[in-house]
Length: 330
Length: 294
Image (tube, rainbow over all chains, first blue to last red; front, side):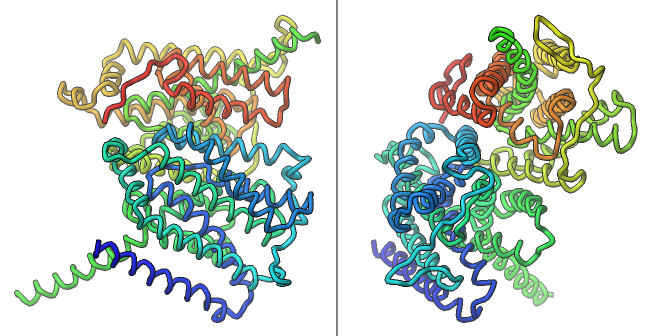
């Protein structure tokens, strides 16, 4: 128990350092374009943390994550733009509805494993994408939905990059805090047990089926939250933001950061969002980079950057030390 | 046109896309049976078939039959290379890792195709004639006959290979029990390589025969691949008539749905079938349940 308390304390410390960095970051950038990009980093961090809870922690793959992202965005967007619902209320409705959808869908879908689960979630994602495109009366179809209002609180309207930054990163930090806690809790350990062996977890008294559905639901809820935030900050949504490629992008973010590492997901989201901004020429070809990254990372650095870099550093360092000691021997 | 003729027309066009799905499904099943891997890159070989033929025929000006053969050979080589570089080193990894690797391979192949040939949609010339044939009131291109014929040949060749040749039998043995196969002297690694080669070749062939009808571009692989997977799932991942029937079912339902309900939701139909089958009968319509090994 002592050890666990210690590890929880360390996690809290890490989180406060992270939150402090998030809070002060815009000061260094002094507004401007980079803050706008950081808003998206925040949204994608929520999404990749959500996928990581499912994939890294519980070992259940989802290739349809963009569907929940899109559902959150469209529910929030349609309710506010077409029906004049209060944005906060719309966000709450989006999160609750997507939570319920993923809970109900979770039971049949998580009975599947491995490749079959991957295909089923992929199919689910594509069906939702087609629905976004075809229900033109509601979603505006391929040409998108515009006129989504900003969120506002106490008379502050979140209509500038810097305001959106604090809005989005508030929710991102809360998501990270909850996820870190979840991962360190009894439930987190049960989920890791499922990851390693479902049968062993069941024998130890873990309600495997329910727990998998619950983590799937939590993942759906976080994704819907990200969707709603996205809709209200960008104020325009179209189906392409929620297609198959986005699900793959999220998967790449999680793999880059490392399966099961919450801060790794932030790192992955930051890298994949910032890189294309730096290298404008990539544009369409970033998909090739994703392909290479997916293959190379899973083959050579399965722990992701968060675990891979310290490992490499140590390997390199010990080689240097080894080199020195062998020299001394000569 | 009365309703019967209309239904007949839809069924006929559904059968030819269904034949394509059957072939792609067979590709999935062949790899699954020898490695327990679902190759997410399967659809990309279908794309490669069409695009490579186009490249050899239009860009290099080679004769169509020659281009087709070259395209199949090249796609097979890509498949074998992919197995050798990415799958073989990680064979025993957990399924999630293999899913991610094959997805990575899939978007890499797609990306390189986009880089090489651009984003435009191209049509391959019909194999013979552009005049539709009227058959019992339904119009049909000669290309549809090519599709039926070639599909039939591939399915038959497949059956003969897996049931009557030593290599085919060895591959089936690997799918039943790898360790036992190794013990009786089968080179399991080589069989896995074969299975990737064969399924890439079949996928490429499917992509070539459909290209004159539906056009081809760098990104057709996702949809075709997923629908082929749907066929294989309905068939219970069998390398045989189950998957063929699955492909035809998907093709016909899709064509009827597009004609009678809405063409916008055409692509959704296959995935709804896929989800329903996975939820209700994951062993497929024709497959038998299998006890899970722990």
